[in-house]
Length: 349
Ligand code: NAP
Ligand code: 3JN
Image (cartoon, rainbow, N blue to C red; front, side, top):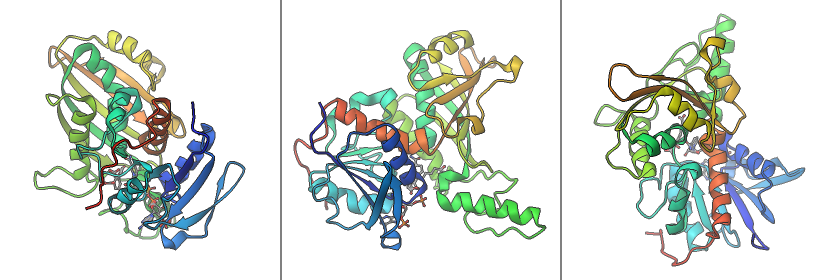
């Protein structure tokens, strides 16, 4: 079923997401016959542990994809915009973790538990959604199928690892400085993140929402394939290292009770229901960190409207929110025999 030769590249391999991609490929025994690691010239020559040995990081160039069948990109939007077209031109299928191609009509935007079928029309680039969108749609698609969601109001509590290595270092450094009675240095975020919450992720847009908030709005509609779902998002950075948490309120067309929602979600792929408030059991960022599932709890009816539900949804933003989802897409490409580009359309200008 799997090809005899399968050369797999990770682009941005030294980053927070790239390192997790390598770990995920390894732990899921992804059937590559050769693996390559690319990053910028800054880290060329770095050795990364992989499959009991090491991968030497190479500088990414336009010619890096010769002989590569599949590339998992996680090196930022501008790198994806520039280099993914060269990959496709060499016949390499790209799974891209950035926002560069997500809303492009030629590129499926895929969460395998939700819309694996969308892969069949790919033209060489498949986009991985934003981490906050991924965990939300994993939890909401089964409810949408049962009762049709009309409106979503979501507030996120996003870990600093969403900003990569530099976000993790900033929180660590500020906590250390504060405990040593020093003035914390603010370098990465617009304000201090230690012991603080920032209602500001990515840049502000003309409509007063942030780009992160509008990613949640637009990506949800594309993945759920329902232009009538209205989404309102507030994205907040919190001083947590790993896992994003989300408070989600939905209004559905048909009535669905909390008990019914719990029953549906306990059968849903990729979801773990964790909901026993009388025993103080609900999803926690520290428990979701390092895990694959999307945890859902605090499921309760919103009594201010006829058909409303509230829930609390937590997932590891670097795993399900990025690396794991990308590897699952790659696995789906293999399972659906789609690791080829039928009509080679150029993404080069
Ligand atoms: P990170 O820790 O800062 O790592 C960035 C990686 O990109 C490093 O490997 C870096 O290599 C590489 N890179 C930067 N510029 C490059 C260039 N010109 N050519 C080749 N490689 C380059 O960031 P991260 O958290 O891993 O995130 C990386 C990207 O993944 C983000 O920018 C975002 O687009 C995407 N992401 C998506 C989600 C999601 O929601 N699905 C979540 C987090 C991140 P060097 O070591 O050489 O600098
Ligand atoms: O901040 C977070 O928690 C998630 C960050 C995601 C991110 C960070 C830098 C650039 C993205 C993304 O995936 O949307 C991008 C981007 O590619 O736009």
